[in-house]
Image (cartoon, rainbow, N blue to C red; front, side, top):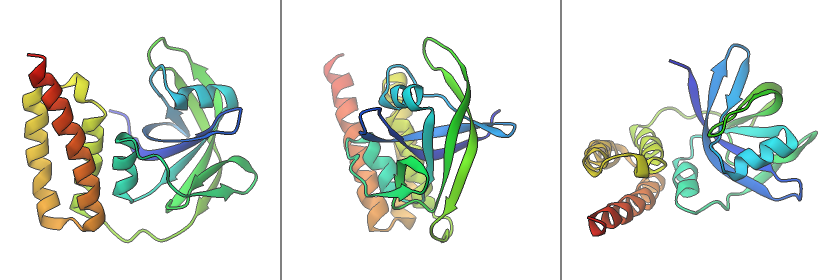
Length: 191
């Protein structure tokens, strides 16, 4: 199994529009692979510019927000790079594409780390943040999963939310839960 880091990518289009999206990057030796699905803004931007910023953040609200239509997060410049980073990033890497493995569904951009930066200390683990991250991944796959699997996963993840969430994790959880409820209602209406 590959090693995957769950991150937030910032990319920029040729016309200057910044795009923020959650994406797991895959380690392959000394390189990181960005593998966005077709079609996507991340894919178009990486194809056009060959650059992405990987933002390492523990802000659960950003993962949940990006998957629920809330993509307006504060940005900060990256010295020597046209693509900004998240202001909330603990650290970032500038990735430059070195090769591409074409695929009709999910091309793979092999990237080298061209630069890195540290911005604030990591304050430790929290089960609710991990539950929000897992729920965000679940929301990104709702159309691929049967309703009973979705309901079981949400019930399990809710335990960590109930026991360890602070206000930010609670807000992120409810954003994601709204998406799950809407999806399940659509499925039920279509039966």
